[in-house]
Every structure is written in structure tokens, then in C-alpha cells.
Image 1 (tube, rainbow, N blue to C red):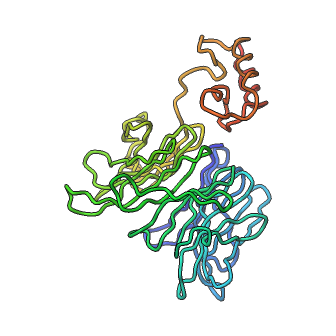
Image 2: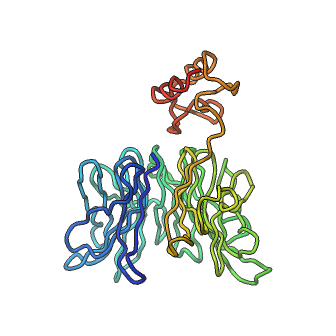
Image 3: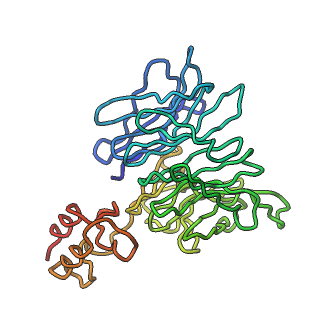
Length: 361
């Protein structure tokens, strides 16, 4: 829907405050329960928002939360027995949430969890490793993250499907891998540790696991490290390249580009990292605004290259386009059958039909 969540900082050392931004209402602070000292919103699906808030008093520590904007209902997900903190990182259309939990003093932590039917379920035992994190989940309840004893030493990205674990290899030529995001087809984006002989140092490098193949995404020219943070169903990956500076990138089919070079010059500043992309191609990025002299969030939307509903590309919307849409009715199962998915939800249905009819002629 183009809704955005994140956090704002009121001053250099001020607390993080979770926010929701909508095209209709602008930026709104997400209300938190008493004793919350700071909060971050991490992911959204529909009106449901997840993240974590820091609590003072007897329940001191970070706790995962679920907030429903429509009903104004706040749910503290808590943690599992023996734990004193938790963080939520992703939510799917069924309201299933993934993240990780642990104990600050006793360990081991972090440990991956899935929250469903009102209950946190530990899934670390499915990996057979000391530690794990769950970072992304699809609408089909497929999860990615990392498992191992250390994110720096032996971490491996995984795909978890109802207890079945597929271990992904280290990034090509690298030491580790870590899944940050996963799309509906099981493609994964993330990062891993890589020894660069030219630098004579071990650095972070982004990777994409697409169509069963792991691909290392080296940084933009002039940078030494990279991280991939999201991937959509069109296998477009976004993230950032960094060393002493940081620069947002977008990657598709082996082609890497500076996101700043692909946008119209309406933003006076630099985009430093792209953290999310949805299935309609909208990208959320962070950057520095020269006008405000501040760090800001930036929402990018793809430039319209044609008429929505012109499925045969003849410059008009008519009977042929309607027949193509009706012939593709139902869930999309591959890219070829999804040209009629006009609203980007990977189902050809009534909403797509209304878009087509609205552009008839």
C-alpha cells in the first residue's frame, strides 16, 4: 500500500520513537504502553505493525510488539521461559511474526522464533545450532535468517518451512551467509563474511540466492563492503554499499546500480541505504537531506511507463486486454502469468479488473 514504518530520533542522543507513515495521514507516532523508554517499528503488513520497544522497571529490556493501527490494539509478545528480551523483524499476511529472543546474562542468544496463534514458538531446535535469528517470512510461512554459533564465524543462511530446514551455502568465495529477506518464491537476500585479498581483510558482502543459485553482490565502485536488505518477487534486491561512507544500491539479474543515479532530481541529497522494496517496486530508503540537514526517510515509486491495463502494449485498453486478464484469473504461479497482476499482490482478481476497466479506451 506504500505505508512505511520505522523510527525517528528527536535529537542526537534522544530515544528512538516508532512511527507509521501513510500517504493520507503523513507521519504518526505509534502509541506505546507506560514504561516504554524507546521503540522501533520494523515491518508492516496491512494495518499490523511489528517491532520492539524497550521497557523500564521489572520487565526491563527489549520486547517484541504487534500493533494494529485499525483497532489501536497493542500486544507485547513477551519472550519465552528463561528469556528476558525479544525482537520482532517481519510479519506476513496471516499475522505470523518472526524474530529472535534470548537472555542478556545467561545465554545462549539469539534464538529464532515464530509467533502464531498468540504464542511464541522457539524454532532454534530445528537447526541443531547454538544460535539463530529469523529475519524474514513469506505469506506461505517460509522463513529465512541465519543459524550457527557466531554471525562472524560460521553463520549459514537458512530457509525454514514448517520445521524442514534448508541450509544455504556461504556467499561465493566467502566464509558465512545470513538471510535478511525472502520473497514468495524462496529467493533470499542477505550478507556474508568474505576475505578480500586486495584489501587483505575480511569484509561484509551482499548476496542473493535466486533460482537455487547463490550470487555474491560486490559493492559499488569506490566502496569496500555491501549488504542486501530486501528482495521482491521480481528478484530485485536493494541494500547499501559502504566503507567510510554509505550508498544505496539496487540489483537485478547481475546488474548493480547506484539508486541515486536512477531517480529524478527532486530530492536534494543522497540516498545512503535502501532497506525495503515491495512487489509493486516501491523502495524505502534512508538518506541525508541537504535542505533539512538531517537524516530522512525516502519513499520511491516506479515511474509509470505505460497505461495500467494495457496488457498487449498496443497503447489502449480494450477487449484483448480484458481477455488476457480473464485468462490469467487466480493466483500467479510464474512471472509469465502475472502481467495481469496490476496491483502487485500476485493474484489476478477483482482489484485488477477494476484497474483495467478504469483505464478503458
